[in-house]
Length: 125
Ligand code: HEM
Ligand code: HEM
Image (cartoon, rainbow, N blue to C red; front, side, top):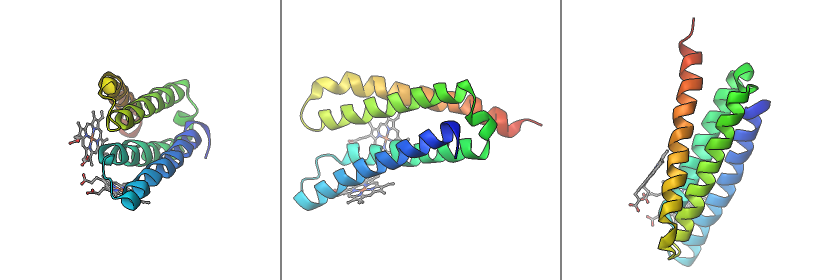
């Protein structure tokens, strides 16, 4: 893997380790207080980033572009802010709802940018 693909996949694996760790902690302690955090680290983190990594792996020229790196930055910032805020909220710090909102907008904006990058690519020609 090269370019943005390598970074997306590296972040995906890191999200998986953190998210599974959180799932295991809930399982061991029988305190299922962080289900939304775990679910979103696994899906918005691991699954989403891995799929985006695979896309850029299939289209390496696109994956090496500045736009792909801008997408990487936006998607990663959104995912980290969203999931960290969820963890804080479900630990009792409801003041972080704004953070979850901002992170979610970042995640959605990242997906919109990805739609522009990826759909243009697969429909051309
Ligand atoms: C080490 C591996 C994992 C452990 C120990 C673990 C543990 C847990 C636990 C304890 C719950 C709460 C269950 C409940 O109270 O109903 C949960 C829910 C969930 N997990 Fe995991 N999990 C693991 C891996 C994964 C993976 C790989 C994914 C997805 C890629 C995933 C996605 C979810 C989702 C979406 C929920 C919420 C389900 C719902 O809404 O009811 N988990 N997990
Ligand atoms: C902008 C991004 C997203 C936002 C703002 C968002 C928001 C939410 C909210 C508010 C809930 C309800 C939580 C609760 O009842 O406690 C939820 C649940 C859930 N979402 Fe998302 N979501 C996003 C992206 C995604 C994506 C991309 C996936 C899957 C690929 C996903 C999978 C789930 C699942 C499995 C649940 C149920 C988990 C649980 O039982 O707590 N979400 N989401």
